Amino acid sequence: MSPARPNSPPTSPMSVPKFVAAKGREKKLTVLTAYDFVFASLFDQAGVDAILVGDSLGMVVQGKSTTMPVTLEQMIYHGEIVARAASRSLVIVDLPFMTYQVSPTQAVENAGRVLKETGAGAIKIEGGVNQAATIRALAEADLPVMAHVGMRPQSIRKLGSMAKVQRDEAALLADARAAEEAGAFGIVLELIPRGIAAKITKELSIPTIGIGAGPDCDGQVLVSYDMLGLTEGFQPKFLKQYGDLRTAAFEATRQYLQEVRDGQYPDASHSHE
Image (cartoon, rainbow, N blue to C red; front, side, top):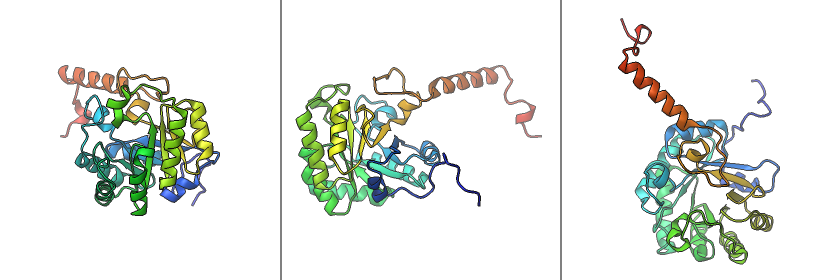
């Protein structure tokens, strides 16, 4: 067997302990969202460390204005598809709005159902200080949980805007500390100033995964549809588009329509005798 190329993605499966152990290493952790088999397979084969089945599917897949209408059943449906496609990446599934906020008992029951029915490796909830008891209950039930502080999409009615950078350093530090102390294995930092993200990353012993939080986090996450240029009219400062699949898909569709209408497709090479 030939040795792996230096830049080839690792082949051993990512686990929660391996994810935590990557804290502070030279190579940053990589995370992307996925909601279906095709993209999950592609990202897994490319070598992404973790795939987040985000409740962002409510916006990028379902076309809704917020993540709040997404149901537990929808997250389980998409989570199972992604987990079945991923042979190496750690699959993390969001618990959607009002499936964990009522009580720690509710959170444990729903998280257990997600992991049991999807085959995913972990779940993610939004919150820090306000969800410390829930994070602790999940961790004590051996249900790996990632926290999420800063801009929290499920709190949009309180925060007012999904584009608002969260700048309360004391509150952000308190949230991050509370999540770690309660047993979270990692934490997403969304839309916070770079300096605060760097301070949190240095202080915590668990990995920080940034989105709009600067380069000093232990890793980064992007919504894959945004990263691939599939979403229209969404260009926040933190987003870098690594492709323009929307234009490519549009042009391919136009060519198909034209060839069918003109009788060019199917031609002899695409027909059976």
